[in-house]
Image (cartoon, rainbow, N blue to C red; front, side):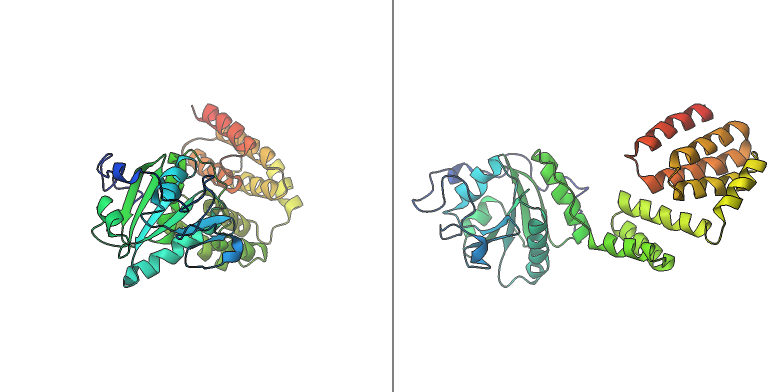
Length: 314
């Protein structure tokens, strides 16, 4: 099965001809204002729960769509909000793996996108229009046109990334939802269980290699291990007495970061890089970069220190 993050779309633009579906919807099949509706045409509300027509959970519409409601619920809605179509069937076992994850992510999305569920058995013409040959089949529709698609079941981490790409295609800026995996890892770090924290952060990075928060968390674990059992005052005094002692300066920088003096720590190590050479210089550089990772790439002090580091190196 292809990875929807990295493989080209399974269709070319224009391959899905939706022109015959752009007729006026039958009366009663959806409100003119584009509010969430059920497949039968009635408004879907939070009180509707898991009704047969559709549901609004957490402010996000999860809608059952038919050919009669496709224009209003998918094409028209996609002009303002990205719509993800889940083609499924009751007999499809893989669908029962993917659909609950899609519904969960739609709820987490907080209204950034809408999940439209289409039963292929009841809506064979729609399945034919989208050239659905196997299910589950998922399409993203933005601005009235399909923009990407994938078939089969994909891991949740990859599905999140695919949806993020869909939202970007629709010009939607959405705050990332809280990740319970990170919450557990952060909790382990806060109570001092460094082994559990490291395992949790590494697990996240195995699933999502570009997860900046997990990278920062793992760097914090490594930092915490380096300063275990040290006396901050003694460390700083030793560094002051031996300004060119690489080990003493690295430990002093660690203490400063944990004391809320990260900018001073960065300056300390940039200055050391200007005074040492060869393997020592590379050791200090790597240590400084690890401290940048603790803070994260958006920290203004990190951006400033990176410029200073570049100047010192070149």
